[in-house]
Amino acid sequence: MNKHEVAHILDEIGTLLSLKGENPFKIRAYQNAARAVENLSEDLQVVVDEERLEEIPGIGKKIALKITALVNTGKLPYFEKLKKSIPPGLLDLLNVPGLGGKKIKALYQKLRIKTKKDLIEACKKGRIARLKGFGQKTQDNILSNIAKIETYGKRVYWWDAEKNAQSILEEIASHKDVSEAEIAGSFRRNLETVGDLDILVSSSHPEKVMEWFVKRPWVEKVLAKGPTKSSVLLKTGLQVDLRVIPKKQFAAALIYFTGSKEHNIRIRTKANILGVTLSEYGLEPLTGARLKKAAQRLTPKVLSTEEAIYKFLGMKFIPPELREDMGEVEAALKKKIPELVEYKDIKGAFHCHTTDSDGHNTLQEMVEAAQKLKWQYIGISDHSKSSFQANGMDEKRLFDQTKRIKKLNGSKKFSTYVFAGLECDILLNGKLDFPDRVLKELDFVIVSVHRSFNLDEKTMTARIIKAIENPYTTMLGHLTGRLLLKRDAYAVNIPKVIDACIANKVIIELNASPMRLDMDWRFWHKASDKGLKCSINPDAHSVAELEYVRAGVNVARKGWLEKKDIFNTLTLAKVLAYLKKR
Ligand SMILES: [Zn+2]
Ligand SMILES: [Zn+2]
Image 1 (spheres, rainbow, N blue to C red):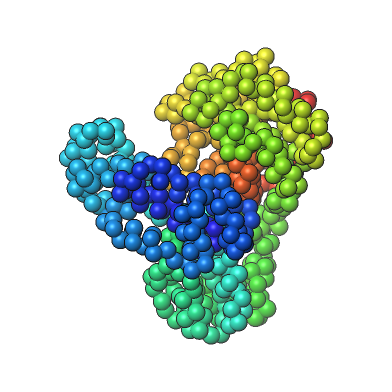
Image 2 (cartoon, rainbow, N blue to C red):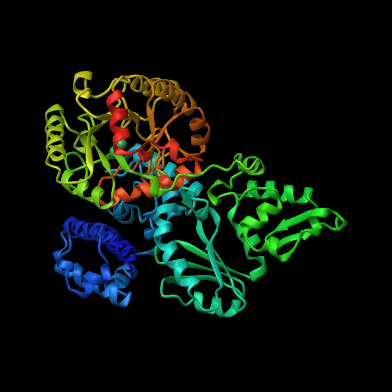
């Protein structure tokens, strides 16, 4: 079992214990252990083999034994027993945002609520509102949250799917009867959330591959097994579909199962004009069109790769993440596909938190981690005083941090340069949380909305634009406040905000937290054409979260962004010059 699976189970144990009404310290211990395992920078198996688990802060003796069992055997009888002791419907209730173990236990004990259906009924009858510790507001929230899960379905963050995807793909690709293997679908298109993983392989022995696939140790449940298509559920709840395809159809199938419906319609139409049909089975001459020139050019070579198929259609290769029918077909016909930004272009990152506000690692630890990533610079921006829930800093603490950053830069202890900044709250009236005389001491200022989300669009837009107009604002943080799969964006006129940023030379961040990915990729192409600059910011609250920049790069690519559009692809010297000029 890998560290993600172990962390997932530890977390689930914590939840199950809370359903049983266990003591909060015990519950917290499992949650902390889950986080410690997830953030582990070395190989979990090695730590287990060398019996060093207990040296990790947050992991005690008892939990260490359980982790060891999970890593070595993939099983934990304690967990199985715990699961069986709880009505299955109650576990399902945990998927309702806002309902934790404690609340679910109360609902079960006081109202005998065992399933989602029971819960909806009780809400409709007003019984939850009357329950002590709940109230009308909670009842309304429960109903709207249930509606939300129904619309979002069982989607997961791209980032979470990715944790399983690469290792599964590698394992499948290494099977001796598999000649090609690739993940298709929304995962390959770098969509921010994915419903499942679609894996395509080519093989001349489909039955053998299927037989082997459904017996992999990471398979929790086989949903369907057929000669050429099977579906399984992983332990983390993610569904994986495997399709086995004859070798000569592989490239066409890959195009078919990767593109969005709209993209596929566009390229099929283009094929028809040329006198051929394009489907998951390949390119074939249209009936009655045998004499058309293009149909005569149909040779096996034309079908051998995706590039060759696009070329046959008169197009440049379209990178998978662009296949959404948002201008890419026209661009490919004109041979004007952008040179998308890559992770290796990134030179550093802004928007990182430390223990000075709500981060988990100290300033030193964050800089050290940035140095390990070979970043030339890191921008520290902890919360400002109005974000008291996030331990926001007052003026004194801010200046103390700035002083420590200067000292650190002066000491030359790290090759990574540190920019002293702030994630400054945008107050209700659009003013910033600190006066200009404080802001002007900083290298950069990110302005963000952290409260009062329920304004009408006009008021919210004016509020944000006022903050953008502050002369000390460098960047706008998480533009819409959305939390993917959890909280919708607040009402704001995005095109107006984009225009205000361009006019005031303010950068908009692409918040790279996999739960945010905000501003949405759908806006970037047009905005960057108009001159908007993007900064891919991890919003890291720990050393491990600096990795989020990768998720940001994926989505920036989806938004057509090139190296030149991204602020943090600039070298340290250029960033220094830019910030000084501002
Ligand atoms: Zn924030
Ligand atoms: Zn932040």
